[in-house]
Image 1 (cartoon, rainbow, N blue to C red):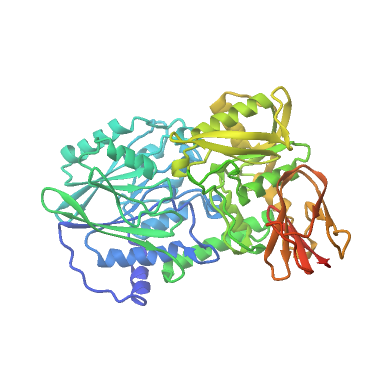
Image 2: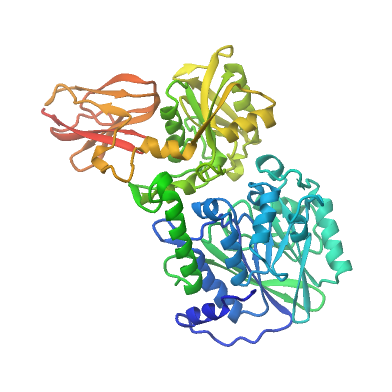
Length: 618
């Protein structure tokens, strides 16, 4: 079963690549690796990036042409697309095994379904003994079966005369952010690593030791810099979705990571000279639409896609049908590392605004909506966007009632509690590495940030609800996700008042807010604001532009000339619900008089925009 599709791999690859003979040397090893694929079996970005079948072509080619290949997955193969929600990772595991993977390190998201279901998934995949699922710091009680019998602390691969030992570390953040209990992810990483190295070197006589780390690149660098990883020849990193076109060396230990979502596959060439091991070559191969799809994997993925359509069309409509067209990239996660951040930045993102605005739309009597940055894992690419694409941006959680993710919740917090929570969350941010997972995306709530140098301490400024200062003793109604409510209880020991858990998923509220059901033409979309006609029109020297907001949100009102060039911005800020009126004085951003002619004014809120025409006569 290990090489189930080897014939298909060979046939497909040989049709495209000229395979040159390569005679393996017993002292040369090839580590092929991916990480954080998150159930992204299909390509994404309008078919430009990734795709498991394309990755299979490159992996299969290297397995055939490189000396002594060992193929490694750094973890988080689960959770991220409707492929997971429909199949729970079982087909992906079977494809990984068919593609010849040797080692899979458990990531934090493998524990999202709980250790019992994770064990059932691994068992259902029917993995053979040569597929090593490892985590050296996962303490698994005997009662947790079949997980206990499948997951190993170490893995050993023999290639020629060289014995290669693998150990793996899962991020201890999984204890809080995922659902491993009663499994415990040991936080004592250094003793665990030292013990694993010693066992591999002295107990199993491994000449080469590889650490497969699901800790993140920064943590791997710190651990390598501690001096306690003597004996490790290579760190295959994961968790932070970083790419390393050139290996990072810390204490002479090379660290490599291959991004996420099958967008890259890495290949490291190691040479063991009888006493030591050296990395002599590294390739990070981008997987894009120039790479042919391997036929067996591609056919399997297409079959799984048809199953998703059958399951989810009654729930959300055809997941692969276009629901809107993105005119430009729509980031889901802040990407403004220090020192780029200034006091005007709020670090809100288009997807964050969309999700929290949809929550307010769903709960109209809520005063604000919040969600954690870290729950918004991906952005959208320009071009047609389907429900499947949109789900990739916000894919966490699973509810058997509809097969979707986090549920909508409402609760009440005092202003003082909210301010304390926001300050605590800001303290967790690490701007220098662009880590904002616990910062809030929000609607109805606004703030700016300031970063003090050199400690990179994040300070929140100008915090307001519906445009007004937060009143510490006032009770505010908040819309959010059930996961955020869980953080309040588990991390802050705050039991929110009037906690109500809706049966509707947050993702479904986003679709409802967009109001793009499959049987409704685009022209019938209802907007959550109304842009009025300017008056007077024609005008000289000034005109008034009115608009009405259904609820408070961040809006932008911009004037353009007839060639589409921006003339000035009249407002770009959070505004409360109600009617607003702005005056354009017929001048550009520099204060100079605009010439006579046709101009356009455009109101933008989240992904919606409306443009009207006006005429200036001098």
